[in-house]
Length: 291
Image (cartoon, rainbow, N blue to C red; front, side, top):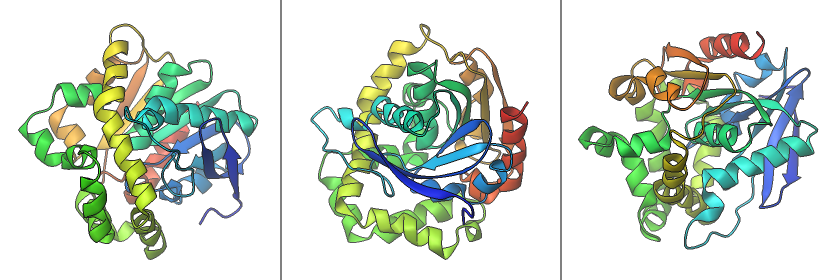
């Protein structure tokens, strides 16, 4: 995986960021979701690197990135804090302006980055999400049951942390096997890497803190921005044709409230599009990133 890429660790103001870099040309940053690490891009990054400089990183708390101490308000794990990490990482690598592609949690970091750092972000792609504020403000029975992880991981410390410690593999395997249409796309190496981080109590706490921040700070930040600030960079939304985003929302209409230029469509596969359907993901991203 990631042939021709070099690994790096960058110190930023709040923590450290681990990742890989490869290719040449305009820069694009790839951000992963849960329960993954930057390894989720293993089938996409090398092909993008044929035309672009590709940087794939771990969000703080995940993979090989740092685990800063949290606070009572979960501030270090807000998407605002995570987005700042990534902007500082790209700047340290020599990129003042770049495109960002995010999946799941990484997509939430992506649109927050585009709102908070508009001079840094040239293009935005969000995979299989609607904004956090929209999701919470339109929650119903289907949301509560289908997105149970939002409530479970956001529950008060130490309840989810202690429960996950008893069977980390059960949680990760359940996510991978039930949120996907074809779980054979997850090779043993990447599956082990995803499970490994959930066997680390400090990383589990950090991940839970992200979800606690989502239900408080991230929601507040979205509510404050909606109707007052929009993403000026072109935005591409891609989502699973069989998942909740397709079933519960009108994704392009939702994103048009958040961004000035919106395009996108549903793709074959389940939630984990870059691993389940890398061919279509690469085609869509190259059309968008290399116009």
